[in-house]
Image (cartoon, rainbow, N blue to C red; front, side):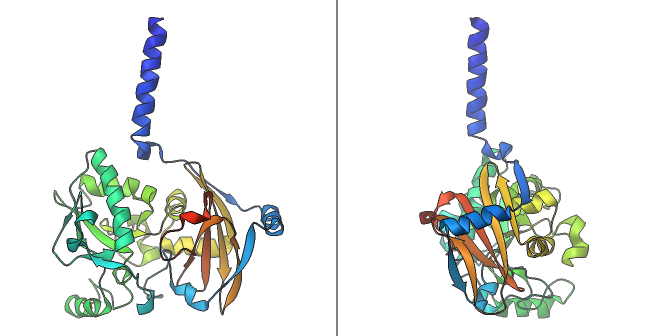
Length: 302
């Protein structure tokens, strides 16, 4: 009996530990080709409906590719940009380099959630050094620092509101616990390390362990699983057209549509979904199979 009692106590402790440390177990990612027969069954069952998307949708959303070939448009900048210094509720758990750090409010909320979980693992010296920069600020920076250290207005991810530079108050991010934690865990919260060390030939940007970008789940998980930079990922979706993914037992379906003019696409009638352009030639529809339609959030969600 004593042995059984001890076993039950150990199982309870393990279950409690696992429940309060979900991030440690958040690594089950399965990706597979989409079942086209399943798609046809859904369409005929009435669970999908037709929706017209305007060509401008190509330039909106979390999955925009922004680089030297594909600049962001002014009208594509996130609409909820705020000064973080003036929103104490958004900066709990991390510091700001100065009082003029701006970011999308919804992205800041997701970042705060991530940092709160990092604190539970003893990682707590995060510092945002740069967030959103408008086109005028980017132009000044480019003129002052030159092409070796800055990008022209519109060609920097900082012009979108989706990206931020994160530092540590302890040491440089390539050595800091904060940098190591982000590299291993940011994907679990929808963020990616945008310019990894092994992808400089793909991104055209030197290794930046401080620069993270929000793309959302399941995309961050798929990119990690396949070791994709964002450039590779948007090409992958364009080539595959449809894929299915399971991340920590949450299920998703992803569809790519080429858009050259106003285009009719298929969207679910009763499930949450997001539409994002790729800033190139199409839109990506992400269907959240385990979430009903009334859970919509974010300005790229229909």
